[in-house]
Image 1: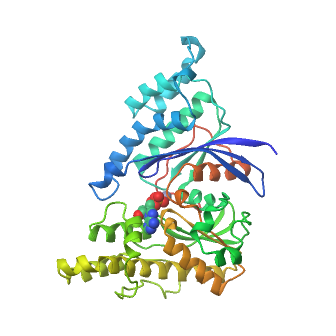
Image 2 (image 1 turned 45 degrees about the vertical axis):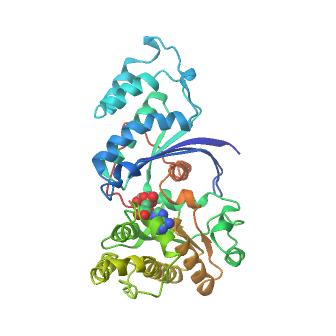
Image 3 (image 1 turned 90 degrees about the vertical axis):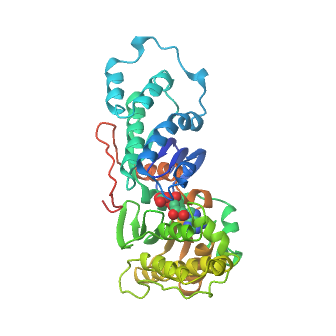
Length: 407
Ligand code: KG4
Ligand code: ZN
C-alpha cells in the first residue's frame, strides 16, 4: 500500500504545532506519527489570563521556522549553496507577496528555507479555521509559502475536524491508562480503530463546544453547540476565580481529585432542554456568586470541593446530551474530541454512561497529548480530504476564522 508523508501545521490559537505523519489506505486509513512538535505560548499569554490574538500572531511568526527545522529534522547542512538562478524570480516574488505582512519571517524564510533542498513531504495540511484570525493567517501564509516554493499540494483543514479525526490514530496501550479495563473490554477500544458510522462526536475545546453527527468523513451535521462560553473556557474562567494558572482545565481536574463533587449543588444549564445546545456562562456565574458569599478562609478550605462540584456539573451536561444524541441518531461510535477531552473525569463518566445505556456503541477518545491542539490532527484530517479527491493550492487558500465544520 502506497504511503504518503503529510506535514500538518496548526496555529489557530496559542500553540505553534507542526507534525509529520505517514499515512496509507482508503477506507481504513493507517497513520504513523513520525514527528510531533509543539511550541507553546502559554507563558506569553499567562499574565493576561487568556490568549491575546496580536501576541499569538507575533509568537507564531517567530516560532514557525524553528519548529519546521525541528519537525523536518533539518540543520544548516541541508542548506544548498544556491546560486541566484536556481530559484526563479517568480517564485521569490510569490514568497515576498505571501509573507509581506511578516517582514522578519520573510527575511528568515529567504535565509533558511529558500536555500533548502525540497524535503520528503507529499502534502501540506494547515488549519484555516475556525480560530483567532491573525493567528490563523500566519499559519496559512506560512503553509502557502512552503507550498509555493516546493510545489507541494496544500489542503486547508477545519480545526474541529482535526480534533475529531485524531481519533483515527490507534494508540495501542495508552488508552488502557485512560479508561478502566471493563470499559475497554466492552467497547473494544484498542482493537477497533475503524470508526463505524454514523458517529456522534462531542468536540469540547477552549473555543468551541459542539455535538456533531458524523455520517461519514467530510459529511457532518451540527446537532448543537454552546450558546455562550465553551466548556474549556468555563474551566479556564473558574480556574481563574480559584487563583489557578492558565489554561485552567488541567489544574481544575487535578484539584478536583481532592474534593467532593457533591459539596456544592451547581446548576446544569440546558441539561433538560429539548435541543443539543449548551450554555456554560450561567454555571460560571453560579460559581462566582458562591465565592462572593464565602470568606477568604472558607474559599481556601473549599477550593477542591468547588473544583470537583464545578467539574461534575459540566460533565453531567456534556455526558447526558451526548448519550441522548447517540441514542436518537443510532450512533455506532461516540468520539470525544478537543482539549477538554484530555479530562480523565469526563472520559470515564462518558465511558460509564455509554456502557450502561448503549453497550454496543464503540467509544473512542484521543490520546491525552493529542487531545489539545497539535499538528498530527491536522495532518490526519488533511489526508482524509486528500483521499476524498480534494486538491488545494497556495494561490486560493484563505483563513476563515468563523468557519463551521459543516461548510
Ligand atoms: O483544543 P484546545 O487545545 O484549544 C482550542 O482549540 O481551544 O483546548 C484547550 C482547552 C482549554 O480551555 C483548556 O483548559 C482545556 O482545553 N483543557 C482541559 C484539560 N486539558 C485542557 N479542560 C479540562 N480538563 C483538562 N484536563
Ligand atoms: Zn483546539
